[in-house]
Image 1 (tube, protein in one colour):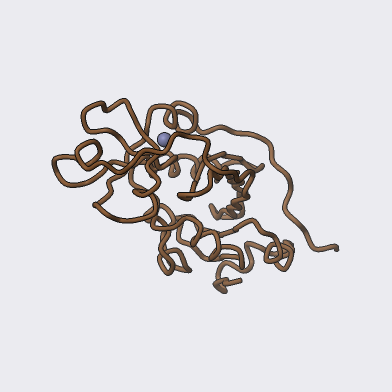
Image 2 (cartoon, helix red, strand yellow):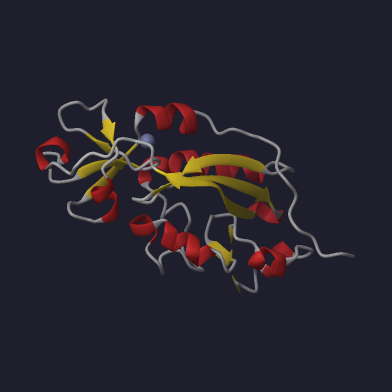
Length: 209
Ligand SMILES: [Zn+2]
């Protein structure tokens, strides 16, 4: 666990050792979304997120919104702000797959005092990709300006000529062969980012009083 002295009072009453034992990655952010707490699972989570979550960029002092792909930033800024004014947690489901495995996560956002948030990322499912895998053909995926456009959510890659088509191209997820810019494919936009959902969630572990 890493925790700033300023943030420690925000987590008072929570069983931090239970959060450290948990396989779910947790981080705490202040009112301006700077990271002030991470649990032990946070770094494994960062590694599992691969190129998008290079280790060292997501430690204490980093701004969680600043390290979020730009295309997703307005959504998460809104979700964080909406959670800050609530008294109960919010859940958001998202996908973060590796080249080998399709992974679904649940993000639980717990409002704390003074605009702070505790955000817990739990792995919900992990399975080999069922999608058709496409080879990394340069003319099909590399845009005129040199980048490939990857969905910031599902990591599929947009075709140059048929922009409504986004393909699962494992070798472009595992290697930075060409520069990557982020977009959102239509299904991800419709199902995950059109409106922040608000659902009830399980409580945090508390120390016995
Ligand atoms: Zn997508």
